Image (cartoon, rainbow, N blue to C red; front, side, top):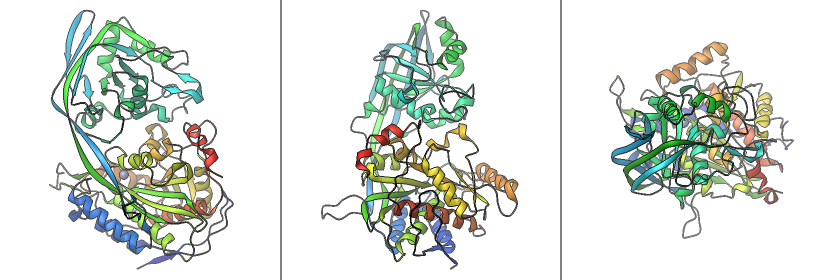
Length: 552
Ligand SMILES: [Zn+2]
């Protein structure tokens, strides 16, 4: 077993005292954890399957061996379990979707998967029926007080179907109040649906355009017309309008024309502050379909190491344990989606960090939580559930450091992030990486909205400073060309395919580098009295500021 001693780092960013007790990270144990979790016996680790039971049991054993304490649900005895129950709601459209559009006095039937992709209603209703609802274009559907931006301007959407543009107002021009080409959270369709529910719309449909969405209609069709999972919400109508879905761009342009409107001209208007909702005169929609709802229970695995001085303040490390399970076979006839890199590798990193902290002679000042979440592949649901039912108060949660796919291609000269964010943690990461002689490479695809696509995001949305580390691309052997080639090969040949399997020839030197950085960053955050924060203008700063009095 090859071991590596983690030394003290110059904590440039935080000014915290350097960590005194070295701790062991093992590349061999990291590889073994990936091998076991991604073996065929674990059946691709789908939530609420026998593969979940095996995964959860295995992770608990690793946490126990590392010296963690159970940090999950509080039991009747008063102690904590190793897990947090995550009840999930599953929705399926049962039978056909009837969708009729009336424009200029003539009616037309639209087909599920062609002009529209209607999602199974997530409000809990078993039947959805909309009769001749008026249709309104609401631009980008954004209400952002900190940017002095409101596309709704008090317009009453009750009983109406709203059509909304994907991405944010400065995607096309590349400059403006929403981060230029980079996508802000206001550009994600998940935000738009939430805002629609707040505005009281009966239906909300995102207009699909390939470039700003960053994927084609097939992706929209496949991921929206099959089964949908959600956390179980006390008031689902607060988050979901009864009718949610997508509409093809060409069908939209046609509908606008029938109402005497020019889609492109209105889109230009929507890129300005003065935009107001526009009703499509003479256009209405009727829809009818049945929905089948079921409940399943999955689990987050939670270990904790209580802090020596400030146990009520928590730093969280997250990694999702779930993957896609058993599905369509690939060309080799393999049906098991093993998810070795995505994300058995992140869980293995979590286990190594648990060992590094847990086996150390000295405890950090603040508590450290090791959270292996479920159902990331179903829409970040395990982390969404945790952050809406936190086991430790979010106001005094220092930060979330997330891991989703760890480098197995050898040592690098840099580290990166999955999504850049205006948060002081990013500066801390850059400083800690520099202490390990690693450069920082910003997210090379900011327009794809990666910051909103893994488990740190539900924390960020609720104000907790968060980031998701990403491997560097500048490989010591072969440089950027080799790093980018390795990445491209992964995306093309293995990502979300049965071929994402454990490989004994992996070079885990890069994984160890990522672990050193994550360990030192976490340890410095756990040992300082400071609180990382959002920078001025960040969309989640106001939410964090609301609880400022609870952080002293
Ligand atoms: Zn993942």
